[in-house]
Amino acid sequence: MPRPQISFEFFPPRNVEATFRLWDTVQVLAPLEPRFVSVTYGAGGTTRDLTREVVATLVKHSGLRTAAHLTCVNASQAETLEIAEGFAAAGVTDIVALRGDPPAGAAGFVPHPEGFADSVELIGALAGMGRFDIRVGAYPDVHPEAQGAAADIDWLKRKLDAGACEALTQFFFEAETFLRFRDACAAAGIDKPIVPGILPIENWAGTRRFAERCGTKVPRWLADAFETAARDGREDLLATAICTEMCSELLEEGVESLHFYTLNRPELTRDICHALGVVPAPRLEKVA
Picture 1 (cartoon, rainbow, N blue to C red):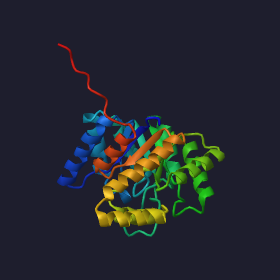
Picture 2: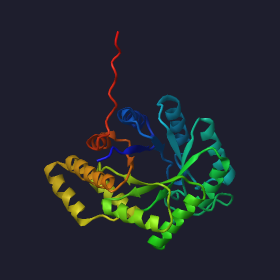
Picture 3: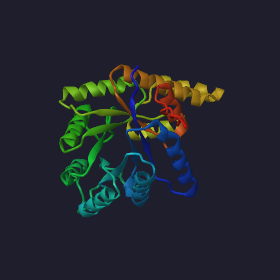
Picture 4: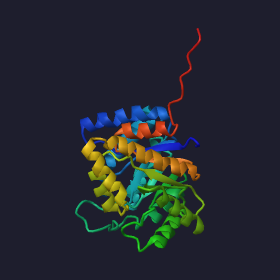
């Protein structure tokens, strides 16, 4: 089985305890030499300043290639591009460009009166700056707001054609879900990399609620397995085994890169990477 390239997603902390957890996560996962890490942007742009601070700190102190998330929500075009300029000034060369989730309580996404109408407009503007590698989101299970799978793939193609270099998918629970999506994208003429997003299951109840909100299909067998594991206190063992098996199947089918949603909790992600052969490079001892 080939050794995959890996990347990790973090989210910005909102308190002191969460700050320590984030930096512990970075220290645990950095030795695995990810090709990049990304930092999220809260719903409605709620973590805009925190994202900017974390990204700047990672670029300056971690040595990791760091991608900043950027959305269209609650900002004018000028404000959004000013944020992008700030990222560039901090040494950021990568952006994950997303439409973004609406603020809590909002019925749906409504563009700012002077903002970008959608992610395609945002991507085009960022590409026009000529300063970033741009990544976008993709959905192996149909996005809740999409009219269907074909419309989802057509929208992804528009985002890539607008200037993005790569897509990172929403998480899924079975390798076949991603492989079918990859084949459908290729049939639609998409030839840029599509990287599967991997979510190690830290908490089954929370993961299931999140899956239902974002349209990710939950297989019956998986729900049954976690119900049984919970009775035996073996959820972490099950999560590691299931995720490792799914990633192994993806790699055997030609997938070269995996993007892990860490939730700022590194242990399961680290263990899965180790099982896939991604381990820290050995240190060379200096000879006196």
